[in-house]
Length: 190
Image (cartoon, rainbow, N blue to C red):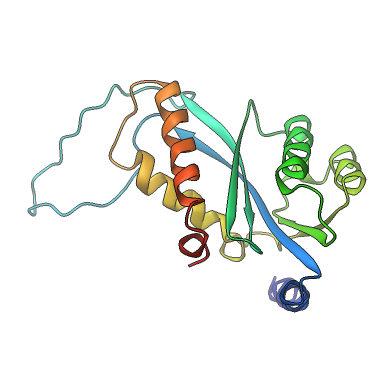
């Protein structure tokens, strides 16, 4: 709905001004399922010729469920593996996030989507207890969540046109990706 998007953009502009005055820390959160087998990508090929890539064709269950946080204020990313993306593991992730951010004098504002487990009272209560303020994105607005770009970047670097030999290899590739990009926060921000 256009009015909800406009309302969110207005709220974000106010938050951004507060962030520039060092009053708030803005953190985007999201979940993603990264599959062991190849993700779709793009390639240049002669017209009419197929691309052949080795694949063990693991099933769709061969995946890792990740929680991701993008500290918009600092250009840093956190990746945490949850067994499943649900309210219980979201609460665990909020505790991990609090530990990752450490003690801060600024208000921490979490921006995330409207998935059902984010709306659970237990999740909302935990966020409040940890001192987080929650700002939900308008429905169907992944374009307003920059962490979606992180997932795209991770898939391009880690899984596009490639099938990892094991879930452990996929896990290591994902964590190496996050560790590497956190060395250059300017690149993450761009």
